Amino acid sequence: MHKKQAAVPVVTVWSDPDAVRPVDAPAVGDRADLASWISGMTREENIALCDEKRVQTQVLFGDELFVDSVHGHWAKIVVPAQASAKDTRGYPGWVPIGQLADGTPRSSESREKVMVQSKQATFFNGQKDQIFDLSFATFLPLVDEGEEEIKADSPVGEGFVRRKDVIFPNRHPSGNGKDVVRNAERFLGLTYLWGGMSAYGYDCSGFSYSMLRAAGYTIPRDAADQSRNGKAIAPKEMMPGDLLFFAYEEGKGAVHHVGICAGGGEMIHSPTPGKKISLTVIRGTIFEKELCAVRRYWKEG
Image (cartoon, rainbow, N blue to C red; front, side, top):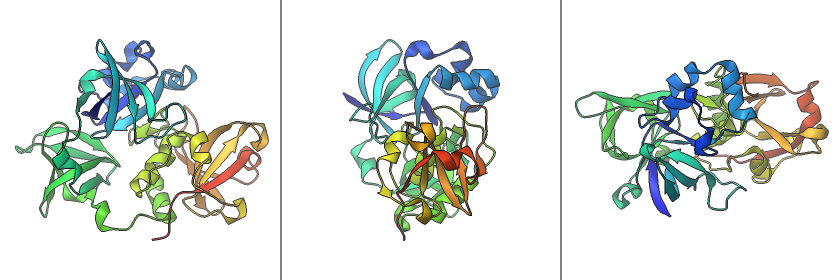
């Protein structure tokens, strides 16, 4: 098993290489282009990613993966930072080998990390040429900082990001529930993407995972796994930032959805393929009947 890093802004993890369709070509090239991929899909093709279980998850630039084996242009991998019942080592799947770089150097492991806090942030080289755009919640090792920009290490070498586009998580306490909601609200109107883990599109559990990650908390990847961890909260005591879980058979069956409590009887969530991230009132809806668990991962600062 070999350690690698995501070397493009967003690596999409597929169920198997045969799951890739012609329309998915922009997502699997050596310079993955998520914006072109998503805009190039019809609504039906986007929904089919879910219905046909083509995609597993996604990995952001610089995040680690472990490669089990290589088959042609594809690597069978697990993602250690995304805990899953599917594999005790991390979330499993397949990725194009051309989107990976060698693992994190030890010199970078000890460095302070910066996190992209803008929805997207340009990563550029020393000549100020744009390399590509990074997604919200991308973490990079800090090399140097100036008033206008920071210098960061990365799988493709050192580069620069505008200082206004990043935060320094180690210099502040982890976020609380309201911080989770404030970040989540920034993505209202973003189209759902099955397996999505980036500012280009989230699925329901990818959204909750990413908003908690941005606040300083690592949680399991999928809704069912998320519902079995964290601190159990009575529904009457839910607070903004808590995760709300919904199950079939009016809450007695399998967990199928997760949202983020926004307060005021509402939740913010990425509902389902073909829909957009939205604020939804819980009372008087199917969600009130299906609510099966409330979990808290955030802590007071």
